[in-house]
Amino acid sequence: MRRRGAVLALPLAALLAACTSLPRDSAPLAGDSLSGRLALRVEATGEEQPRSVVAAFELRGAPEAGRLDLATPTGQVMAQARWQPGRVVLVTPQGETPFASLDALTREVLGESLPVAAMFDWLHGRPWPGAAHEANPPGFRQLGWSVDLARFADDTIVAVRETAPAVTVRVKLDRS
Image 1 (cartoon, rainbow, N blue to C red):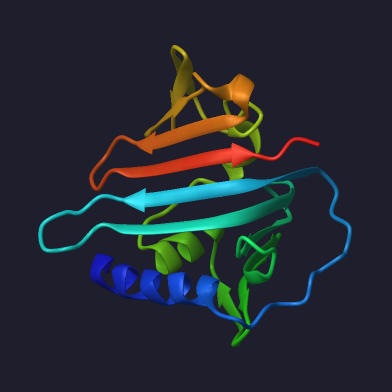
Image 2 (cartoon, rainbow, N blue to C red):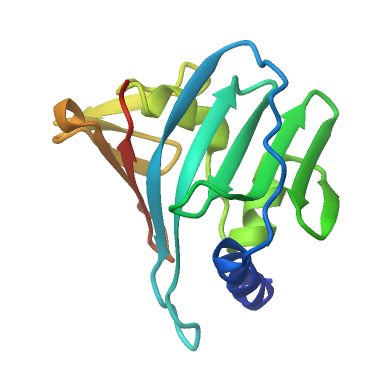
């Protein structure tokens, strides 16, 4: 399964570098609107090579219903995850692919699961209320991740999954 994820992460990276772009979805979503740049790295394990994705992002909505756009540095939306109760899809220039959950979508596309629902709170510098957490100054631990807020005043958040393979997500938020 992880090998399949590694194989699929390469097309996502190629997709982000492609010239084709998705039209911007301007449908309003209730909740947050956060944007910036993210770098995701999955460390090598055994025979697998490390994998990484760097993209501009826009996270809109809420854990229950929202959208995550991944874009090139010039702002072209190359991939979009959309979710609402009972429906999760990945939209690319090649079409829509349905998934059972956000967890399944991130696992399939990136080769590892990311806690997208928790990210809404983590990017505000606080633990997600949907799961227990413990203090880990200058941040906290939650869902098997260590969230480092040492540079939060500079709009930078780093989350590291503590189980193998290690996954690091670095986010630099755009503040307007």
